[in-house]
Amino acid sequence: MHDYSTRPSAPTGLSFAEQREWMVRHQLAAWGIADPRVLDAMRRVPRELFVPEETRADAYFDGALPIAAGQTISQPYVVAHMTEVLRLGGQEKVLEIGTGSGYQTAVLSLLAAEVYTVERIASLARQAQETLARFGANNVRFHLGDGSLGWPEHAPYDAILVTCAAPVVPRPLVQQLADGGRLVVPVGSRGYQDLVLVRKNGQEAREERLSPVAFVPLIGEHGW
Image 1: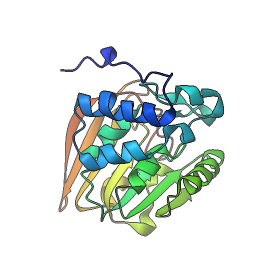
Image 2: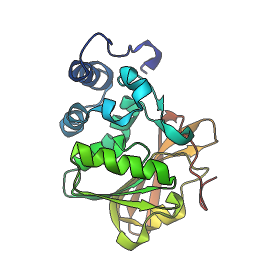
Image 3: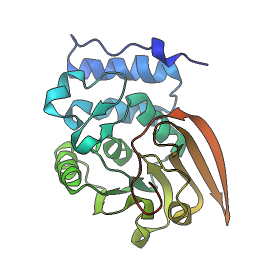
């Protein structure tokens, strides 16, 4: 098993583009991210665009960073790992729960045909929409609301990615998953969780626990 505490962050003396390449090589590929499409997407999305101005110099720190409204932007490895687990081929319709700053959304936009993203905090949703427009993501649709309820109007989804932690797998999200679809969600306490992969086959949904993580809580009817 890898000791992730030994993995260094990108040297800050490099340009952002150089730090991003360093991240892909030394934080992602070297630690098991193998899907070339995921690595290419992580290489193409400028993380510095999605963090607050005051922490921009730390954009390629190997960990989560604070954004507005008490939320966070996930560690690059976690973003890549959760994305890789979805096994996107490019034709999928994906639902994201928890837009945040839009970083994960941007990665998904390069890997799927359509991305539907739900955020409960209006200020974050507005900022993310502006940032994603600057990035050039034109296949993303936004919704302000309770993410634990999903976005049933556009279901079913080939893949669902949840960027906040739930006490149990939210049933509405499983119901909105297409047959053969995949859902990845952190499940556990408010402090620490396990990343759970749900595979749907007909009316059956099988859960697999992948790795320990720590996410902000999913606030809503089927969250906290």
